[in-house]
Length: 397
Image (cartoon, rainbow, N blue to C red; front, side, top):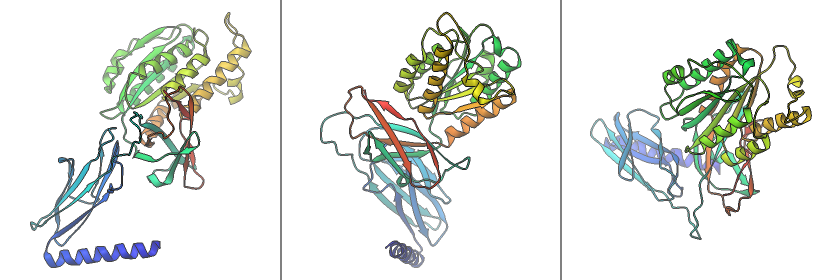
């Protein structure tokens, strides 16, 4: 059947090309989206053109508005339609240099809703890798999403340049004094310098108190100027400021990211990691932890937390430490355990690259009840040997 379909398509294109050649005209067809699709969020708009003369331009329109014009192949672009569940009219106008013109038109569907209930689009940020390399050639049909075991219909699909808002948390406790802190701030500045126009980031330098902070911005010079006076001092209130960063991000739209850089464990927070873990589940932010270990220490040494304070003993601190690790991984983020300050900036830039190479999948949960229950999300990819990393779920509000 697949060979027959390919042969039929090839014959159709040959016939179209022959007709074009005879008529000195141009032929165009919209490949994506299809009339049976639901066009919501980021949508790929693809046209196929056959012409006897050189193509002068291919104009793309959505709902009567021009969204782009291309003059060379591939005739493909992305358009953001927002999250409203409405039909859209896609039009393509292909013009040949000889003066010929052809058009095609597709109208997409509205997602049928049996009851008058508002269902929020659920977005997943998925990292797919194989043999330490990210896999970037997957298509929507390669993904299967299950929400509490029920398979979901994928309605939006994008790869890469989806804007994000990031909170960069820099530990500036006394143990980070000198080159450690300067390298950490340089890494944060490099991250901001590599962002794109619609991305935003806020840097928070903390110890047992907030030492320096910046507004949300994408201007590297603002970050550098705001943090020029940062100095290391005091203990580490990691839980408190991770919680604060997550609360700030809740006020922002779209993809939300926390990057935490710290060389130790929490020693001064009022909040427990249990409090923060609940906030992580609510926020759905991706969390990346850059942990600067003691030079020459084994990974196992990091887990043997021996701190004792008036609030907690070694066992409690180890439990808090393990819960922090679990929360980072459950968010869909990663832990980078490094020994040298020379690794800090490459890790920051590596996280930025990962964000550029994530798949963004959107669906309307079929079993949403707004009852505060936890929904476990599972994403499978139809490709052997790949690793898939995504947040483990969300709270149904």
